[in-house]
Amino acid sequence: MQLKLKVRDTSPPIWRRVLVPSSMRLDQLHQVIQYSFGWYDAHPHQFELDGVSYGATDSENLSDLEESTVCLGHLPWSRRAILDYVYDFGDYWEVRIELEQVLFDDGGDLPRCIGGRRMAPREDSGGPLGWAMVIEALKDPNHPDLAEYREWLLLREGEQFDAALFDKQQINEMFDYAR
Image: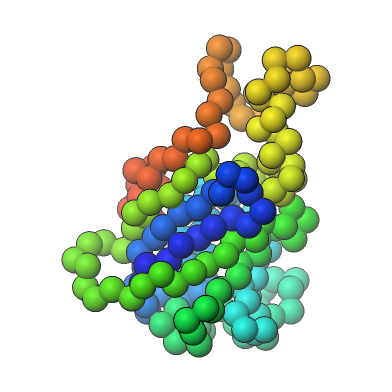
């Protein structure tokens, strides 16, 4: 299955395109999303499709169904169906998951990232608005929080920050490591 993972409320858009097997369970898709955006799985999450929620039973969230019992290929995908994924209910990162196409035996190891745009938002950055504020602060050499943000992002002296960077190879190396 070819899926597009788009972080909502980001401008310019931040997204990833991944190939995954239709037999992948939602708990495994959760890990794919975490690796795709460089997050650390430090917060609760939940999926939702057509008013039905899917989550982990050990989570404080009450979900309709246990995510580890549901395969992507068994979801009630329709032409306009969007699987929503929320991560970190404080920062509220919402990822829209769109089924772009169903492929047959692409011959490669899965999951695999085949495209994307922009650097992933840093975990615990305050959600889409907080991340946008960090990016703007890094552009202003006189911003009062500039040094703090540079340290938080592990930027060395003189190193430039580029939110437009996207590293597909790094994501695929994470997938390879997890296989």
